[in-house]
Image (tube, rainbow, N blue to C red; front, side, top):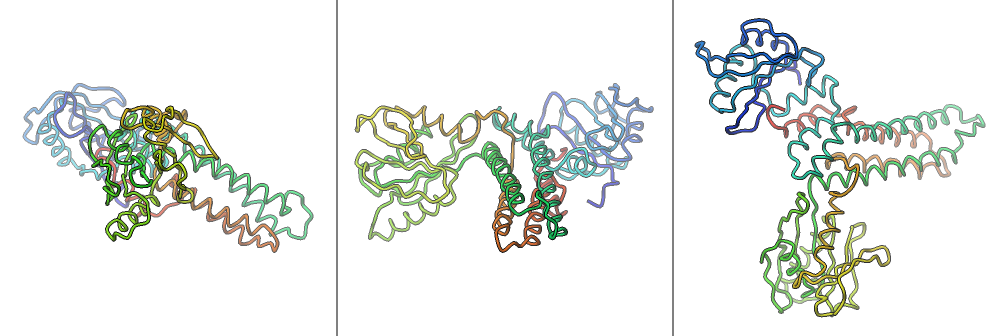
Length: 442
């Protein structure tokens, strides 16, 4: 980030031939390069017809040249955009000519990085550009667009302001501990902290939904042998991916398959049947099944007709749907109902009955039908989780014996965690890793 005075250039359109190709420049040399290419001073923000030439003055192509003077540009710097036919050899040749005139090749994500460093975007909005480009569905694209327009950032900023306000009150309670000020009493501070925790929990849930929409969902199929796990995986994948037999214990290892629902990837993991076994190979399969469940976003716990009295041993804190399989044998009707706070879904993978219901519930978990969803990343979720943990520690310390200095420190750490999300606080190596994953030209 110490080479921001360089003028950078890159092909901004996708690799390969196309009807249109775009080269973008950003930096202090952009106006001079624009004049050299056009043969005269260009008017700002006006498309000029230009003949693009190589180093020997031979014409390469005819296209458009547009100059965007700072600070009213994407990066906040002088930006030049050249539009021509999308021939890769022509684009590469013209890029070499621009480098001869003083520009250097841009690093991946360097245009967005400069927009962030120049205050044109915060870090969440910059990441949303990459998410929008990579969106695999309309829902993911809309969510990325909401983050790009600042929906996620505004919610972070509102939470940040509330955290600052509470920090001020706690610091005041420390400084004026001898004063009988009602708003600085421990009970009032505890209420304020509880309200802040509630708001953060809601934002964390929304961010997790946004991460699923971006990254997909890791779904693990669990249950006793012959509960129908492999048949369900095959039905969702619309292919015979897993071996299905009447013999218990056929599945010994974890079998993974990626399926797409509403344009969002969903990774299914078929696992060994859970039961007591003396077979060391089957025991290892069961161990791997439980380890896979610990990493799951969602567990589908299958119960066959013979498992009506079987216990359901879900890992704590994991979202789950209990799937009553083989209703073609049990005589149940396909349906979805909630029992003791857990969704129960009845289906037959063999006949396809209830499969549409299951896909609907999976789509709901992915967030594809959620109004107002915004895109989020794993680092956002982790930062919010750290902030939540800091608030929880602070809440404990507001009870006797009071330790307001420690409460203030936990609030400060929560504030820093929130700042990491938008880039208000963050190390340069973190920013470097983030922008290194962007497209060249962005």
